[in-house]
Image (cartoon, helix red, strand yellow):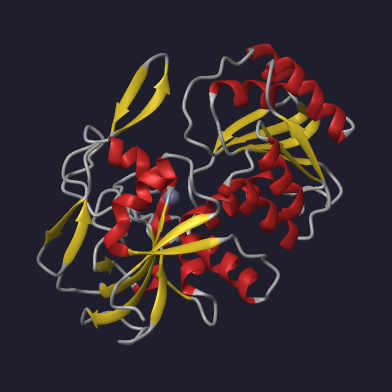
Length: 357
Ligand SMILES: [Zn+2]
Ligand SMILES: [Zn+2]
């Protein structure tokens, strides 16, 4: 197999040859047809996350091994089955659930692989992913039938889709008319609006510093938009004003110091701040306020296979409006990554294997 791999952090991807994996046990080998280029690929490529206070979390220290074919928004065609793999056949086109754990513990067996505490084997992060020609799914349960969905769009459900879906599920239950605030109207923000609309939510408030992005949020179906620029206390006020009061849930898709502060300030009693973005920074929590106002600050990271299937079902029922997707030949993976870094991407770039007509 070949791969467009990170060989050295921060340097151009290189095309390398690797042995094609041989599926054993329940494993399934797929030939990658499509793979989304995700913002977190940029962090993996750079090699670190900013964890605040001038500290960087090195991904190599966390177990990322180079060279690595990144890419975790994968659709592929089954080409070979391990002797114990059942339920799929050669030629089947499937979304590959990438957020793999050890595969054996109770958490993994309950299909909450992304919460596994034993091992992190995520595709495109700790194992080769969709920037390569082939990928291995450990078990057929990690494969989701996309039916008649556009594979380029369906690929994005494996990360940007379930990331917002899982965060929204944490914000629920809310009555359809209760306000839910989404901070950030980039790809994830627009996706979150689409998912909330599909779930028939009627009070979506989108916050962004960019007038163009706020406009895009309104077009996507946000009921109100709030300017996220300027002093944090002022932004908090604007949110509360737009919502007609403090809010029960904020999903922070940026999750930087500034957004976390203004979002936290807007919470109603019992409110939840759900932190999704990986912008970086830190948040100081006023401890008595946490208790008195019964607040929750919680993280949400990607999602599980059950949520992926639920999301695909929502899309197949035709209720989920599509994120704009642009396909690029897989050989241009590095150029695609740079376009993303330079902020020149609307919606999602999806790599398409040369073998796909
Ligand atoms: Zn991603
Ligand atoms: Zn596990």
